[in-house]
Length: 485
Figure 1 (cartoon, helix red, strand yellow):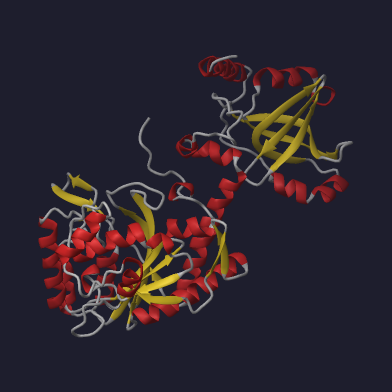
Figure 2 (spheres, one colour):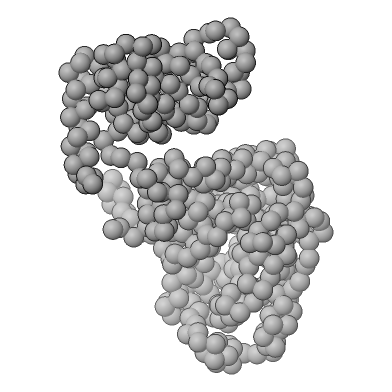
């Protein structure tokens, strides 16, 4: 059996033979008149008219029977069978095709449609032209590939051989389209904010750092667009949203990738309760548009997004599962409880509680559930529930153990906000790298006055995992981050 290197050398010889015969092996134009799908759907009409059409696509199979060669041609729509006949295209042209064309090559073919004795819709080739000569062979058993990481590394091959993979990414595009459509129907304006930021903020995460030579300054890839979107509220916009990439220099697992897509929106004169109703309405609209119903199948279970969704306080949920009362226990005692569970927790009291929650509670939540009123220290950018409350006007939507949405009433008191970020700086100096940082420019913007508002963020990748019944983010990100070979 020939090695990959031997196959490649042989195909380069064929490439040169094509060029020596006076043909461009990589021409810049094709005269395609129909996609394969259009040819199949208009088959009866085209046969009746005996009209010549031109198709273009990748050769997926070659089967020779004497003076006949059957082939399957695949484009972005579907596949169709084509037939090369020696007595139709001439012996010289027939032999040239046999000698120089391989599975994987892109080809343009002109001919007339007919149906074979077995009833298969087929194009009889009158003429053909090379569009792209492939130098590496397509793998023979890609569909059953056990090395899943190889599928992610060579996503282009995954898309060629696995129709269901391609359908996931087509659905992902539709999901984003429906979210945009819903937001814009509610008067939200799509905006873009900086990806390179001098101060990273808006989330508890470790950033990627880079350097801008032109200004000789350090910059960070954003971990969230939040602080810039809220500056727009100060500037007079009342409803803004952004769909864009964010970057966090943290672990990789089924729910995390270093770069990911976020949808965040900010809504002046609304609060976190308005956001819960809005979320219910959004899911009702998007799911009905995509699937015709408000429920989905995920991991063998039916998840129902029909409003109203369940609501439960964070402290109440925590006590139910751990028997620990967060309002009574102090930080040192909670740290000891975490240690019993095998956790060496950094950060403050909530960071410890959050780690316990993620390890012991989150996976038990299956049906969509709003977890409300997180401890005030959990979200330094959120308003307290009331003046003296130790709880925040906040929620997260958890579905099938996945933290899907984080939202809260935005803190717009610049004095209190500054104090909270100063507290975060102290936590950062203890070695907790995910603590939020002081952004003096944001504080100054708040001092000019930001209207009462609510903010909402959702991971598009995590939503797509749910709606495509996938196991991990790597299945719904076209090119996930991988360790180099």
